[in-house]
Structures are given as C-alpha cells and as structure tokens.
Image (cartoon, helix red, strand yellow):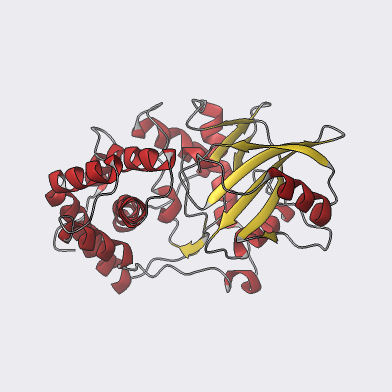
Length: 339
C-alpha cells in the first residue's frame, strides 16, 4: 500500500501499549508493496529497538503467522517470526485490520539490490530447507491445498468479454480498457495455455509440499550484514515445489540477471531436483493471469487506491514487456499442445 490508511497514529500507539506493552512516541508509515489490503509501519521504542508493524485487512488465515513461527522454531534462520502479544497470540485486532508485529530488519529487497552470487546460492539453500521441513499434520491440515482452480482464468475472461460495458471512472481505468482491448488475443492465449496444463495436472497431480507461494524479489530481504531472509508468508499452500521454483528465472526478480544466471546460481544452493515441466509452465502462466484478474478487479470495481492504482496498472502492463514474464513463460513451456 502506497498511501497511508485512515488509521490515526494515536490509535496505533495506544494499541501497541495495550497489546504489546511497548511505549512508542511515533510510528512511520512505509509506502511499500502492491497489496491494497496491507499497510506497514516502522517504529522504535524508547530503548531504540526498531519494529516492523503490519496491518492486514480482508481475508486472514492464522496459518500465515503460525507456519513461519513453526519454521523459525525449527532453526530456519532465514524466516523472521512474528512477535506475540501480551496474551501470547501471534496477531491482534484493530478496527477491521489484523495486526502482526515483527522485529525490524534493516536492509533492501531484491528489487532494490542486485543479489550477489552468494545471495542466490544462499536463497537456494534456504528454500530447499523450507521445502524439506518436516511439518506435522496438525499444521499441514490447516494449509490450503492446490486445486488448480479456474477462478482467476474465468475472471480474466469475464473482464475481456465485458470491457466495453465497464464505466471508466478515472484515467487509470480508461487506460486499462484500451490496454485490454489491445492485448485481448494474447491474454486469451495465456488463459487457454493455463487451462490446458491445469487439466493435465489435475489428471496426474504431482507430489505436494508446503510452498511459500509468493516468491519474488520483493519478498527476499538482504540485511545490512548481507544475510538473506524470505518474508511475507500470507498465503502458504500445499502444492508441487514448482509453485515456488517457477519464480527462479521467471522474470520476478527484476532485470539484474538473465534467467539462466538466476537458475544456475540458485540451484547450486537448492541442489539437484527433477523439475516437472508441466507444473513449471502452468504456474508461470497462472501467476500472470492472477495478476491480471486482481488488478482488473481493483481498477474497474473500485475507485480507491490513489497512487496504488497507477502502480497496479504499471505492474499489469510490465508482464507484456520484451524478455519479461509472458515471454519467459512461453519459452519455458516445453509441453505439446496435445497435453
């Protein structure tokens, strides 16, 4: 969220005192991320200890804080665990927000920093450790399983079919309408490709593991001592490992390196593994389709967001740039059209 939510700082300060026992004089809003339902702040207590405060509105699943806490307790140091309230809960409530508190880690994400060779290798090792973690059934039973749902694809088809019927309310939604008409056939082709591969995966489902589900440059953090963290566990899922691995070399880490360089270094850390080419291609297509669906809903069905609206349109359009996510996804699709 780029614009500060309508939540007075005084209420936040009182909340931190009541729920966490923290005496704070000032909080600073951080204009980060593309999610309109998430706002983040930085604050420091009187003894100069910095914290990271996250407000999450809308759908909230407690596994998004319980799972990273468990993985951190297992000694996976690349995960930043949430801090408990005075009553021991890993989250709290303030108005229509869920509130999660973390230690503040000073650093840069993968969009702002060119990950070094060592970072990429460490990233591979960290994700392999997460993918290999032994997680008890009591936790895995709380994690949503992959269903290869057509919901996002149907949403995109609906918007493409009704683009002339939507009332454009600002320059951003007007620009989106023009863009969707221009890219109509290309987007429908992406939907068709994803549907074809989804059917193949439903017929022969690969083995599932616990996946982060949103691996990209913004969720890889490098601190000032060069240590790597994997952050933002809002939507873990039980899915084939390719749900996470599709990001490596998939155009989701900026343009610092070529896809081949990313993959070469990452797998030095992750280790040898057999890649399911159908799952890899499916997830790369589906990620783009989900982005289009979410941004269309945001830009057509509401007028909120301010600067976030322009950023959302930018993110949507960036998928179509040369050598970016769509081109990479199509090149990585080694499957026959008969699959």
